[in-house]
Length: 285
Length: 307
Image (cartoon, rainbow over all chains, first blue to last red; front, side, top):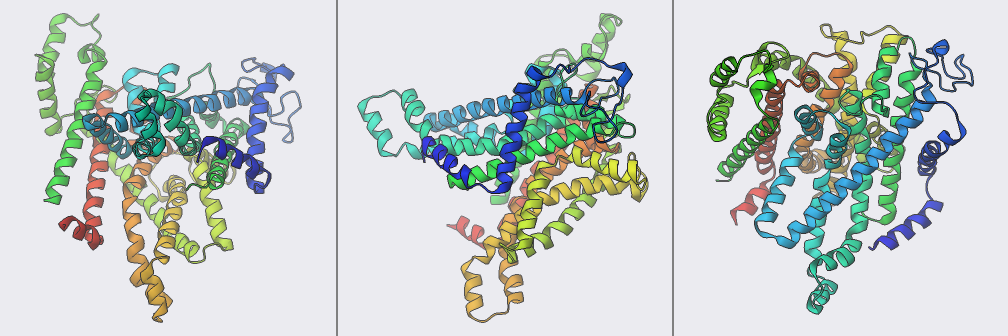
């Protein structure tokens, strides 16, 4: 099925989506709106320290509207930090998914096109990748090459490349026998043009489905590594390292950990609910 | 022949991983100056250490020494604990095995009965509840769930210790965290495996012959559902390894998982490389055992190979 058909079907399906899916979409839209609008309407700062209001509880638990979700141990506003963390975590996850989809698809198509030993090496690499838990690979790379943001995004961008490679390779091989590819070849069009303009649009919706499966997993990987102190480093903040710092204050300020923890859970849940539903609408398992 | 071929492939995979680790370690520069500050040690001292640890000669000579050391269980010296890496890692192994063993028991105790029940009553209320629970469990990361349990059972109720090892009470929360999150995945697999087996023709024909439902379940459904479940074992083992790295750090559990995180933070490459190779051995062995069990469980694959 072509990408345009998939998008149209998804659009129509949206009107009849179950309540859970609509809530999930609402939550994600809310998050994106918060990321875009919050800095415009609020003067609460991520780093501003309010020493007179350290460990202030959220509204509803004895707090005041000056800091709606309370403050942390240094008196920094938890809501402002949450918005900044959401932005970091969601943008990094999105970037990582785009990187791994691009790398994986390119390798898959190349393997299918070139065949021979290149194909053998790619298949062996995919098998090797599947057999080792990715978090171990990413920890090893972090230990060897040190911890910095560029490397971190690159490592996350490797997550799941083998899924796209497998799919793209199989589908590119299948499409070589299709009439339109044979026709283009006979007409003398170049290979890159055939793959980019004709094969890729035809397999895009399947790759997109794979990306929706990977997206929540990348969010969880990034937050896990940042939680362990091996991902995003201060002064930058992500949902994971916010939670990592908050765990020291479970006794005196539970909200510092609970707020990012809930945000991680709701984002991962929403994205996977939306993904499950999109898959069933597009009509592929 | 098939077994020999599979063993060979397992050995080649292991050799590839050892080689990759060697290349990665050497890519970061001189291993001696990484351990000893070249400013405070004379060149003669550094040279003596080079000779002692086999860092002399061409890179290929060093590679051979490296392989020989690995084969004799010499993984180098842990800079973080001042002992050899082997004894550091082996000292941490029992704690992880205890944690993973109990978690696997919880996972199966929940996954098998609940998944089977959901499949048999597919489409019913409980089935939908199980699928919902599984989606939630998938999206709830280990460390969020772990901290939630600490908040509830340690901070508010004062029932369980939040940190450490020793008593059965210490085991409860880490085991629940890993066991429940794995059960969320495993239940789904059990359900779909049994659902697929229920649709097989042998089940339909047995039902038509008037065989009792209970007999059908044990004679036809369970053996057929075993196959896909055996296939996902490596996936579950991998997920357990990944989960223990995070959960052991949350609960201060002194096992291999926390050791990985510590060795990465301290850049203790000797310990890290040993853990990576140990995980590789476990994963490759799991895959090998699954391959061998599979042909034993499914006579059709053995027959197909005979052609």
